[in-house]
Length: 101
Image (tube, rainbow, N blue to C red):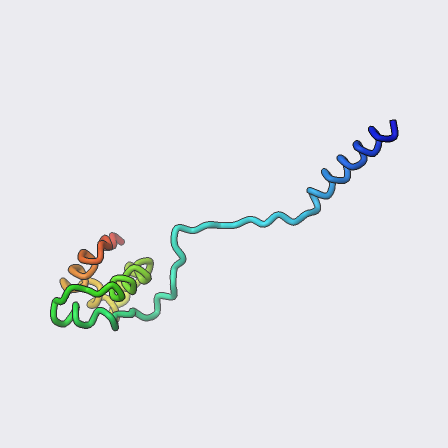
């Protein structure tokens, strides 16, 4: 009888404790959007100016900025960099789809 009582009390305590333990919830997003207040094209200069094949570093920069493309297109300061034929060629060469905003 004492053993059964001890098991029941332990069970009740565990159930009550499980309600008191904070539960962490995580929100997963498809991508974390970086700040879109500047465009980074430093490693893509030769591809932009001379039509060279973009380097791996250039493609990495473009992939990192991909969530900002629509913001860049809407911004008159950055629009010419993202909508130019060179930019489209770089994105295609890097395997990045051109944004549909």
